[in-house]
Length: 151
Image (tube, rainbow, N blue to C red; front, side):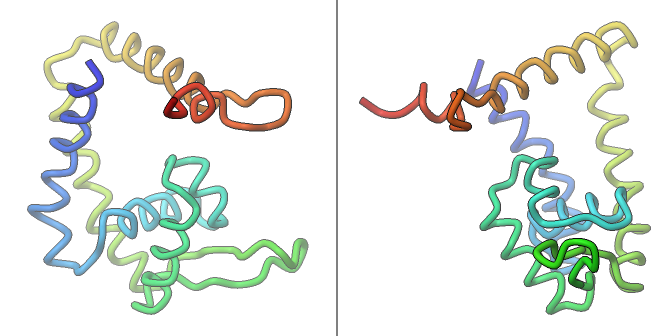
């Protein structure tokens, strides 16, 4: 079943690779970051990492690329000087407006053969799986990484 989940993930990325990546010169992680910032308005790198499950280093690279390309602006949060706020620029807003409907099309197609009960059940299952992967032990370590450590 793990292989089927990985295949599902890869298949879900096909519309991005086919229709958006080359046309807008944007990587998958940059796209994820752009979509997250667009949905939230303003956020921080560690918040994006938590929400998307993308590791902090990959988020950091995507932040650098999006900032370099004029798609986001990074500012210091006046209430917490260690927090860097991420906000879309006008160009970022333009891309978000173009790409957001594509994510809706992907979701609509993916769930088109499921009834509302199946969609709700899948949502509950996904929440449970994600919670399992995000569990921490008493010291704050990832139980998933500890339990799957090679012998």
